[in-house]
Image 1 (tube, each protein chain N blue to C red):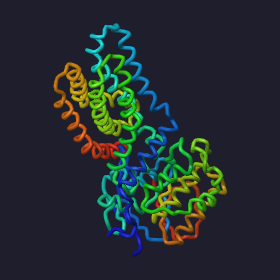
Image 2: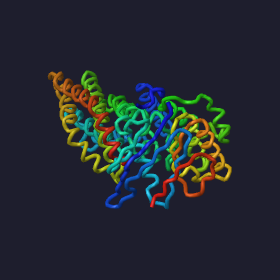
Image 3: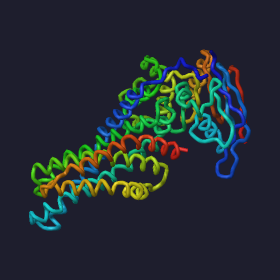
Length: 204
Length: 232
């Protein structure tokens, strides 16, 4: 069975300001959804609305045809979310943080070492997170994303704090994920040059 | 239907993982644990200096002072229960985990009790000596404090979850929790006083135990709901 994510008529108000109205999209396995828009245009809010973290004023999000708000756990089991804040404990080491995350996920890849090497953070393993630079912490967040082995990646500004190499790596990872039949929703300021089936939503 | 192939992780496993992480965190930042404990010890040891060394007076006021100090020390520690998770974004990650949020909230509350309530209970016999409480009464003191701090951690987790998104939520948190904690203080301190006077203590202990069981069965769900509201 191939997975699908669909939204119909999504509307979210923040105070009396309408961030988006009657937004529809559908995403199939192997496809990328790119959310574009200025700062404050509601890209992150849309991601949070899809995740069910905020109540939408109207509209539905469907994961494989079932309402996400009624099947939140099953949906979250298939999702990994790379948020603005990395969400790690600064006092714990990289490995301790990732182990904890793995315990919360449905399934986790066991090749921690290979993932760390791929992301070039292998030598930082024993350091507490607070000793890492912002870009390095971002790479740890990418490691969490890879280890979670989830169907749907939701990436909020994944290029933040990353160097050119890191940005290329993100694009490479996304394209591999899509080739393997995964799905991805990404917010980005800059152009994303990827040769994959892509939808775009421009938020005002 | 939702894809059945992705199995949900075990609830107990997730809860234990949260507790373990918070304990590890506390181990690496002992200040957060020691602060309330220090407060408790200071209030309890300064009081006899202020009221004078008469052993009658001390034995009379001891249970009340120890209980008030323990209550305030716990309140002091509650503010940080969800704050650091909120600030670094790991709370959001907990909210999108496939595990039921009440279980994760309970995991955090257990860790909170182990790092705040339990140390208070363990230190209390030493402080009881300052008030010349007999050994039997000290046992009752520890028992009531154990039950009381469990309830306080659970109650407090609801309050902390409600106020986590607010700036300077500490005052509001105390206002929210104190009315609900009053019965604990009254029954806890009075039970110890009864024990000191040689009266029956069963009723008070049963009340505290019932309170703890009620809090244990309701608080995790209230905390989870409050977290969802706060994070929005």
